[in-house]
Length: 553
View 1 (cartoon, rainbow, N blue to C red):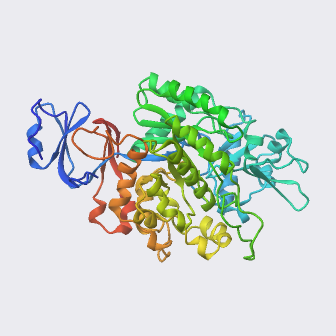
View 2 (view 1 turned 135 degrees about the vertical axis):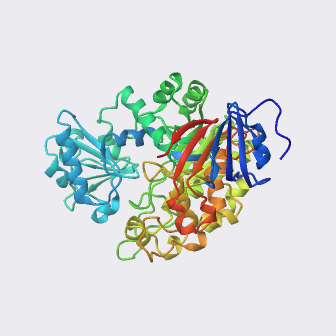
View 3 (view 1 turned 120 degrees about the horizontal axis):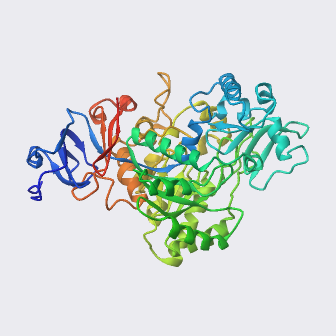
């Protein structure tokens, strides 16, 4: 360490390490000093020279200090709102869902619509719950409950009636109404069909939106998250545009995180919306919130067979079906849109889950690179459930980052019952290829997709290292263990990698002199314990610019 700066004592000294810096020049230290919200010294005993009479000293006492986690794909306001509604995300029991829904309806007799969500597909045969089941507990009011991944919704008969959905209603081009043998809607809506009912649900009030955002910010800080990329800023299906809530939080000094907003690309429109996106970027980008990203959802999800695949899904009997999923944006048009967005300096954040969607997104990035040359736009592809091996080296070649949702790379009922049988053995083994992406030289970032799954980075990191869910019973096999990555790489993805994607790497992402003091204190050093215990790690304290934003109990 160079001699400590002479401008006076530090405001904050954290000492008694270990400190995992995520700085390749110096990976480990035991003490860090902070002044004016910036890191002014990283080292060992000599850092204590910066301790003055007013310096706050945090004794790490062997607990690990890390840079703050950054979530590169999350939906905070929606998650925060769901926590205050009919919340179903912490169980996978169909009977318990119905009990909670009925209880919520009784507790809220004046609510026009019963909303909330977070239920899991694996709780129901074929991933399809029924309106009849909901009718038994809420017969008199419409019910609209998005599932955990928000690519489908469970509705009752009253909601179908309100929307005018019956056997004669055609499927939208970007979705599907599940039907019985006679063609009558069963109560499950997929993808674009969700909007047929979702558009009727009253928007939350501005006060409710702000409360939801702040509730979510507190949850994320409690998990050590100091910055994130909001993966949908705009109006989509039943999701309310979070931009006004962010601006209100900024104006009131309540936004403590650093946030990148990914402006929603309306897939029912074309290039004419780019002018509007440019205006929104200018309007929304200030202080801790920037809106220089555009989110394009290119496909759906594998569980309902809307993820775009290069070859058809299999049927229940293992035969080839006539369905290869949905590309929401025509690939030729996608290349044009991404090239123009890149020319305007936008980053593009792709939802690309199936191998065809991944290839179409990479083709679009390649088109932008060919036409515009190399620009520092840092496009990234989120989810990457199925990646064809031929496309792995393209991430490095094109400078496209891999935005991983690590928690999903494990055996669980939704994977084993609703996905693997319909992909086949070869394609099933291409899922969540974290190790292959790393070996191919891709830049790895990480995000939770909360409320689709837990916002806890340590749970996700556990799966990336073990390829086994923290909640799995003993003896559960690892999910394609050759795709494991080491703990240091997983932590780097959730810190420096996401900071790179968020274009915050100049000031955050590692514990380095001159960078912002965005820090997290864990209750142990997971590097010192067995990998099977990573998920037991908890966050004790979170700091943004040296200011404590979370203290654990």
